[in-house]
Every structure is written in C-alpha cells, then in structure tokens.
Image 1 (cartoon, rainbow, N blue to C red):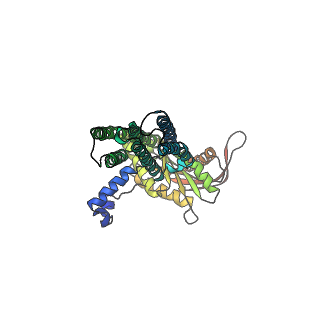
Image 2: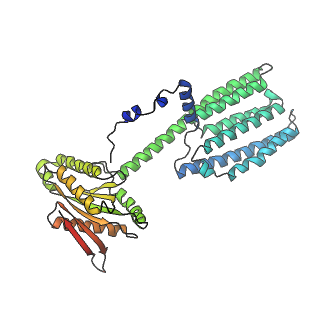
Image 3: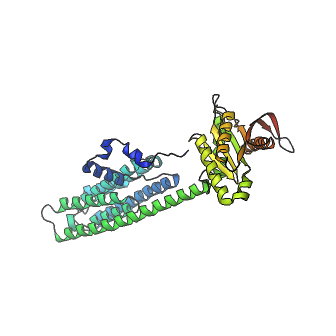
Length: 398
C-alpha cells in the first residue's frame, strides 16, 4: 500500500525536455502557475468566489451610477458627454449578465481566473476611456483604478495583482504621457505603483492564510481518519467506506470484509513490554498492507483488532485472501508466537453496515474458537427477534 520508490527516482525518470527547459519557458511556467492558481477546491471556496463576483457586480453598478451622476451634474469636460454617459450606462446594463454565467463550475478551473482578468482589464479600459473623455490626467475618474485594484487585492493571487497594476500604470502613461508626463500624472503613476505594492502584500498575506487554513484542515482530516500508532486508516474510515462497497455490490462488484484478531498478542505485552507490542502492531499493519492492493483498505479497529476491505473475484476469492493474510501475520509474529483469527464476510447488496460487521466478527470468533491461526467464512447473517445468530454455511480453515 505504500510505495517504496523514492521521489528522486521519479525525477530522474522524467523526460529530459522537462528538466532542460530554457529559462524563458521556466519563467512562463512560473507566471502561468502564479496567475492561474486554483481558486476553489471545495464547495465553501466556490461559494466564496461566487459571492465575490456578486460584490464586484454591485461595486461596478454603484461606480457606474456615480459616473452618470458626475457626468450629468458636474461642470467638467465630460459634462453630458454622450460617450461618457453611454460607457457608464453600458456598465450598468452589462455587468449583471456576469451572474448568468455558470460561476460555480467556472471557479473550479481556469475559466474562473480568466473571467476575473478579462473583467478587470475591461474595467481598466472603460475607466481610462472615461478619464480621457473628461479631460485626461486632471479628471478624478482615474481614482476608480484604485477601487478596481482594491477589489483585486482581497481575492486575486499576488501575481495577478502585480500584472494588472502594471497594465494600469503603463496604459496610463501611454495614454496621458505621450505628449509629456505632467506633474499630476507622474504623481498618479507613483501613487499607483505604491498602491500596487501594498495590494500585492495584502494579496500574498490573504492567500498564505488561506493555504495555512487548507493545510490545517487537511491535517485534521488525516488525523481523524488515521490510527496514530500504525498510520493506517482507523475504524471511522472503514465505516465510511463500507456503504460504498455495499452500493457497489448491487452492480455486481465482489468485496469482502475480513475481521482480523491477533492470537497471543497479550502475552507479548506481558512478556516483552508495550513497546514490543506496539512494534508488532506496526509490523502487522505493514504486512497486511503489503498483502492487498492499494485500492483496498486495511484499518486498525483498536487494540489488536484489524479489518480488511478488499475486492475479490472467482479466481481470487475471499478464502484465498484470508489465507494470504493469515500467513503474512503468522510470519510477522513468528518470534512472539502471534497468529491471527480471521473472519470473512462477503458484502451483500443492500446489507446494513452494522450487520456486515457483525457477520465478519461472528466468523472471526468461530475461527478463534476453533483454535486460532485460521480463518472462517460466514455466508449469511439473519438477525432474529431477540438475539442475533448465524445462519447459512460456515467454513473454518487453518
């Protein structure tokens, strides 16, 4: 279940072209990864980005209405300018259409960042166009660029903030500095550069905090699903995977649950100490994992009890799997005289998970009652009105 191939072997086996990529291609790769960082891996993050789009639409609407009021009632070069009024009206009408896009799906792939960048670039063009219509560098409309950059900083990745800030500054210089950069325009560009730096720092801190939170949640989930001693899945994880196996059984997939209980383990603890017992449990977990496929599940239920959830077939039935597990444990515990009693229960379509585990446990107890170091297969379980009992054929082999 655990790969023994070191990571550097995978690197040495990579195509030479991937290792020998030129500095320009590597730079492009870094920029691409920085600009198109995954926005959302789960539903909560998707919801966050959808809300961010809605807030952006609302912000754009408010800004466009403010420009309309400005152009209608302020005595400036842009007063009643039809193009300026038309641009503001276009924003009012066009921005809400973003909400018609499949935003939830877009946030999970590259379409999300692409939409945000195109939206921001379009906003930059409209703002600079309105500024030009309103007299150029002396117009207050260019302050909307700061508003746009602030909106970016609270969500966009740092590379995106730097890229858009650079586009804003260079476009401003090209548009209003071709005939000589005025003092006010130069001050605006300097302020925009400093503001871009601040927004980049804020973005970097926000994304770093998000990544720490994601890592913490992932660690907590791993700890909750893993046995701390052996490092394999615990009872909770096994119970969560059993319903999937029951569901798959309805489509013809054959799966068995093997309940594994060690024979003679208490004597190891009493004779050699708990450290030796812990070492043996780790060894048992290791050999069980090596005896099954990576897609199967080996779990520690607690104490010296383990369970295996594995697919079987006509050529490799549950009896063969149980015998393989029994032999592996007998070899690992030979020095301490430890063997295993194993109960095998094939997963039945529509079966209750608790009944399935009871059936595997009942088979395991029959193997133990027969002397241990063997397995038992219980074909069916029918709970009566008072006390559960085993029905059907039972096979005990050792």
